[in-house]
Length: 444
Image (cartoon, rainbow, N blue to C red; front, side, top):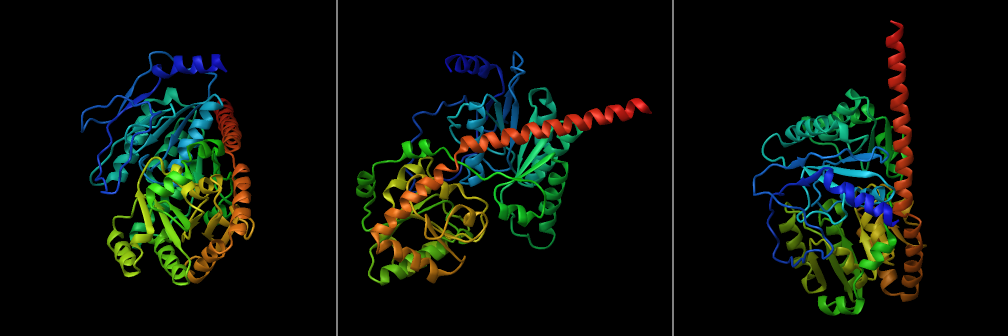
């Protein structure tokens, strides 16, 4: 183990060290985030400097599989896809791979996981087109430094990446996380076309749930998302200290993610109000950013239902997991999901789940065993599920223990091993296609 770490340490400075300064975004007044103590901060360039890849001075170890993750989501985004990219990259590194992530925007301060990050820093009009072109140019320029591309979602960026891989006769694997709602009019065509082309040019397709595979109506392998349960549990804070600091009492429901209508946040607010009206001291712990386009509507709904004293909103933080121990359950009454990482994190923290029956959630949560599954948009069913847990501590404890066991069956180490199998299959398919093409050429 020590020799492996030494080899990795010796190689790291000589390979794609990415430096770039992400654009600054407005910071909400409720945010009081402190930097992660374990973070290794990369050097920064002055504002406005484009992302740079420092060319390696030596070739990477050719025995290490060089995987480049290509995601259209910025690493600062609160997204299950971003969480998966981070955790999967770390696990692949542990398996001996060399991982580099290409993203529109790196997280502020970088990730503490040690793998390389290329932040393309594309802004302004025609952003998606510029992002796609810059992605293709970066992959072409550094084509000697990657063996397989792992693409996420159907996007113009991943479409161009898949085309580059096809031209170079290199394998590209795409993971489809969730079928996005159709756009309005002509706005729906770019995503539909990109999804079709990525699915066609990628050698292998992966779906995070059976439901996702059915939604896309494509053939491929289902690999459900996984998490590092031990890491989640080690990140949890003190329940007593957190509840005292946040002023929480009674039965606390956690919501972790982007606070928006399509995530069911407004439904959850109304459900909490209903349960409180029945005489139960139910509180809400809100973790994550608020959708800026819906902030005023959400604030008005909170005031209309007189819920402000009963909501602890910690906002967008990098250490949201630490706060989960202050809760008694986690809720995600979303209208559209893939295989939500936030629920996996909550279950690893020992929280029973209350979630809507969309996407892969019914494949994760078993009704009455580790949580409750309710129809999306059904506020009455949502409030009844909250009430059942609030009035029955024994039931809550039983479901909490089962939730922790369920989380352990979705370990990210196994997820990474499954992806390595797909990468190996993809390389074999691409190699065979290249050999067949060479044979055809020699006969003509």
